[in-house]
Image 1 (cartoon, rainbow, N blue to C red):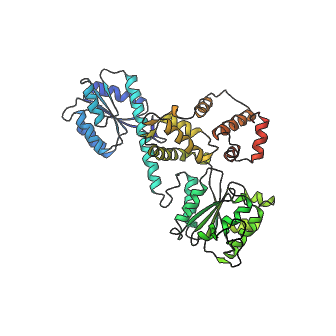
Image 2 (spheres, helix red, strand yellow):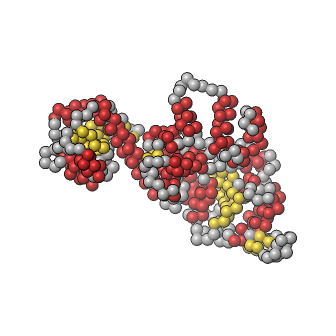
Image 3 (cartoon, helix red, strand yellow):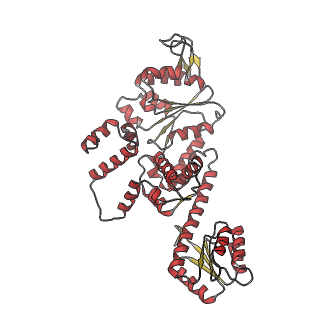
Length: 453
C-alpha cells in the first residue's frame, strides 16, 4: 500500500493494550504500510507534529489524553491525516461525536482484521486523493498569468515556458493543435501576459462565415458599400486597435481572403469594404489551426508567404493522450467548476473513477474530458463522484481492458470508436469529424463502410 509511487502510506497505531498494538502493527507492516506504534496519545502527537501520518488507528480509551481529545489536537497538527477511532465502549452518540471532530470512521471492538484492513485502505485512498489534490493546486498557483491553462506535465510546462517568453515580444504566433486542446486559452494567455493586456482581445473564427462575409466582418464597410449597408461599420481588426486579434481555424480561410490578410499583416493597414482611405492598424496577430499548414501549403491550399508571416513563433499544444499526468488535475478543475455552477456539493473523485479516466484515450482531448465531468457532476447524487457516475461506454471500455485475452481487429476497434464518438457528438457529423481529427469526407466514407450512416 503506497501513498505515492515511491512513498509508502504512513500509518500510526495508538493503543494502550500492548498485545493489540503489536498485532495490528505487524499485520499492517506485512501489508506494506510504514507503521509506527504508540501506547499513549502524547508520544504519538509529538511524533505527528514532526512527521505527519496519512492514517491513524486511534484507541478511544488511552492513559492521560483520551482518543477524542487526541483527535482534536491531531486535526490542528495535520488536517490531512485520516483517523479511525477504535473503542470497546460507547454507542451512536459516541460515533457521532467522533465524526464531528473529524474522524474518518468509527469502529467498535471486537472487530475482524479484514474489517479494519478495509477501513484503513479506504482512509489511505482518501488521504492520497487529498495529498494529490493539494500538490496539483499548488502547481496551478505557480502558473502566474496562466491560470486558465491547466497542466503540470512536462509537455505543458514547456508550453507555459514558451508562452512566457513570446508574450512580451509582440511577434505573430501560430498555435497548432487538435480540436479541444485549448488553442483559444493559449491565445488569451499570450495576450494577458503581453504589454497589450489592457487593450482589446478580439477573436474571429475563420470557418464560421461565408467567404463574402469575411471581408466585411474583418475589415468593416462604408455606408452604401453594398445592398443593406445602411451605415458605416467598424471591422474586427480595426476594433482591436492596440490589442490582439485571434484568428481561429486560420486553415479554413479562403485563398482570396488570405491575400488580403497578408497585405494587412505586411502593411499594418486596412481598407474598409467600399472605402478609399487606408486606416493604420496597431495589432498583434495570433492564429490557430487544427490542420497541418505545411501540408496545406504543399497542396496549394494555403499561401506559403502568409504561413511564414503568421508562424514567426510556432506553438504546438499536445493532445490529452500525450499529457495523461494532467488528467487528475483537469478532472478536479472541472469538478469544482460544475459543482459550483450546478449548486452541488461534489467534492472529490474516487479512485475507481479516476482510474477509468486516466486510462481513457480522450480523442476529443480536454474538451471531451470537460464534457464527461460536467455530465457526471450533473448526475452525481453523493459528495464523491464515483465510477457509476461516468458514461456507461467508458466503464465498459475499462472493464474490457482488464480482459487480457479479449482481442479484436483494428477494423473492429475503429468501427467501435467512430460509433462512440458519433453518439457522443449527438450524431453531428461535423463535430464528430473534428473530434476524430479527420476530414468530413473521410468520416462519411467510413460511416458508409461500417454501416453507421
